Image 1 (tube, helix red, strand yellow):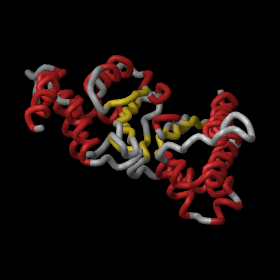
Image 2 (tube, rainbow, N blue to C red):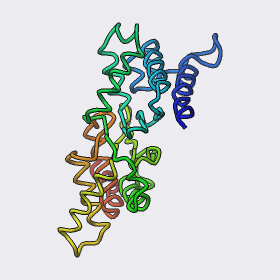
Image 3 (cartoon, one colour):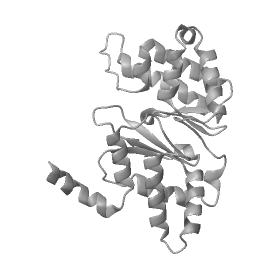
Length: 254
């Protein structure tokens, strides 16, 4: 398993190189999309990926998040913003370029030890608990319903008990909302205990709306959301009847 997961980083290097250099030496270069790669430039992004490959080869399973902008660590379970990692890597300057393996190892040790904005520490084994699968589906149905403008792809984060939801940037960089389902479930159980007569879906939707609006335990973003992106996430989690009313209201406002 570790070999396969470590290989994902190697694949990431190859995909990144093809995307930016074309399919042949004289082929056209592909325009870089905004995001963590743009922080570093070609050489810096390659160095960071080499450091990640060495980190995985040393025995810690990791996987690149592709369009989600997330680095997944499987043991211990962590989700780390690639934008945050790239920024910290760039801040090390030439030391990072000369020794990316050591630099990435040091940065990853910090992220694995301490949770911060852009880093989510997950609860090992929670996804396999009695609460896991169905609760994950209930949360996903609320925060990324079909047909909501501004909500992109979503992922179950490798079955680690988290949910990743891309919120589109409308010309600005996209960001990904990361939800720790174990902590969301803890808050949900507390809310249900205080409101025993309320329907579970109503309690969960109200909780998720509050968590998205106010932050707090169990939620972070790969990049701080703009006001518009936060509004998109809140609208998606809101009651369906309000979502249906939104297009008409926007047309009236125009």
